[in-house]
Length: 186
Length: 186
DNA sequence: ACCTGAACACCGTTCAAGT
DNA sequence: ACCTGAACACCGTTCAAGT
Image 1 (cartoon, chains in turn purple, green, yellow, red):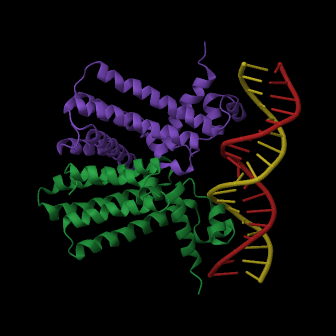
Image 2 (cartoon, helix red, strand yellow; image 1 turned 90 degrees about the vertical axis):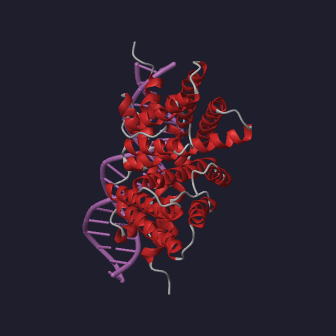
Image 3 (cartoon, protein in one colour; image 1 turned 90 degrees about the horizontal axis):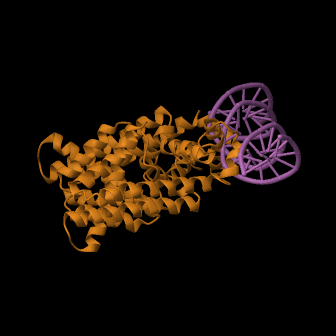
């Protein structure tokens, strides 16, 4: 049984957005990837915004489960953080792709509202998870931990952005190693 | 005497790219901003890539001079870093705009080569300047300082990206304050 | 239920034509 | 030297029409 068409659209679209961004995604190219006509995409997703929002929501859900799994496994803070930074390295290694929410974050001002809110949710999910990991490493003031989690999310996002712009994952690895060596991340 | 047309094109284009990105810049809208027809833009810039590269080069040159001035004034490391982080806050405060090179960095995979190289040069300029400031604060191993400068550039870029995605400069200020409180930046 | 071709107003780019 | 309209192959979107 062939994969569901809607699924194939989303998978192809996700790969393109992580590569070229929301504005680099075109219905005509996407249709070619899937083997249908561009007008047919609208049968599954009324607008490009609806597709973008569905993509981002799914991305957040997937990584929320992926990250939560580390905590339920009982991994320690250092290991969790290593897995976390590996996550972004993996997308870069896969054709210099950015994290979906990372590239959408840059495009924020030209995104439909429905996509924007999902981008923010991805960040919040990351920060909540990071806060749990930080609390594991060193219990402390909740507000201070929240701020640190937000800063770590930003710092890792920036490492990814700079490495992406140079087309070199080694740059990402270097920057993250420097964050660690300086004690900024566990 | 009216401002030079080429200058007016570049200024309008810069504001649009910092807002909507390279892909959000259209010759037709740009022409309206300047008061000419879109075909006329090609008289000054043969292609969109040529315009983008000129924009990025100019941006780097401007901020290289802007930053170097702080060092020739003899400002100390702490003050230099404060001015540096203010620089990105200012662009966010101006209509939630990103640093030109920051938004182009995200769009890297769909940029013409001539624009890509200018984006990399902006980063290198920042890192060299940051390295000089760090050396001022605490002389040390040149390679270690270079790595730290690169990490700071990435961290500040990430703070800007996350704040931009939320449409809230306060997020940038918070994150940068956390970098400082943790001792990651002077 | 799922897909399509044709049309619409939009892109960058080219080019012959104007002044 | 500087500007333009018209054309080209591209965009997302709509819609009537097919199966």
